[in-house]
Length: 356
Ligand SMILES: [Zn+2]
Image (tube, rainbow, N blue to C red; front, side):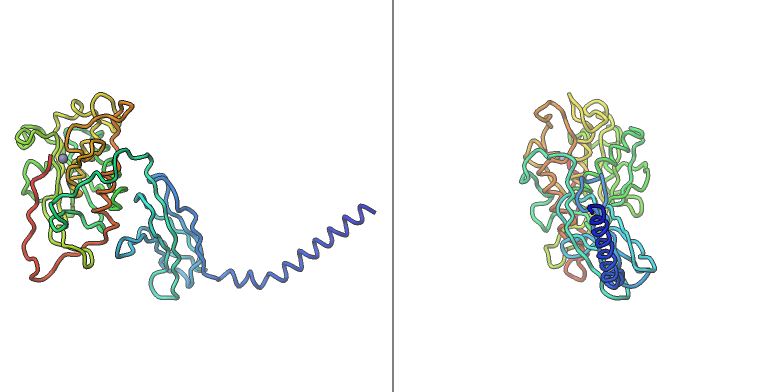
């Protein structure tokens, strides 16, 4: 009896299941073509993952864009074509620290398709220092300098005096500044130029920043200024974001580090005891190039005096809380810059002398 009852209930289950199947089949067919997006990856530690979204967009073989919201504009950070049936899967590298609005959309002709969410990207460490400990170049907003945060900063490195280790360190520092500011950066190759050897010389074509090492003999300014490094904007024009204040948009910037201090006053890495790593000097001088001035906060990479190690005696070359705030003030969150046209400003702004 018991067995029979089980069979009966099994049969009932099978019947119910088949009834269910019949009942839901039309809904499934309709759902197949319903536009949808599912965000697979939206929270991660910067540099360890990518945004990922998949779904189905109306139409076929359309360009599906993943975008992040800058202040006044959506910036495309990844794209891929959808399949003939509309399905898509797009990933986008987003290393920008913070909580950001992101969206996926189908571009071009066809029905509107936009699905948004929030992405949360965190640094790989807990920053030391105080968020308020930063300062911007210039005495007012209208004399501040910054790159156009919506344009990739293309940079070259002169590591003739340090070899591969110097190049690797420069790239690691640039990755930190990029993650903090939201500004894309791209290493475009080697150069033999030394920016501080000649402040007036133009950078190579399509280059916004050169990072170089130079000796006392090549760069007299090191001795004259008593500095181990020199950095800052070199050329630019007047620009603004929407109706915001007029600022100086940096088109060329230079960073030069003292060759004689490499491996002596600074170890070649980003973590050391005794003396700071070269990462400290790189982050500091590139910080000037991005528009930061000296900070009064002793924990900051932009501190104007001699660095001290963290509480455990280790120097860690990582942007601190004030550095991070400063970089948000010159970063993608401030919106894209556009050149100011017409008679309002016709002259080129005068770049400040590079800071030590
Ligand atoms: Zn400085």
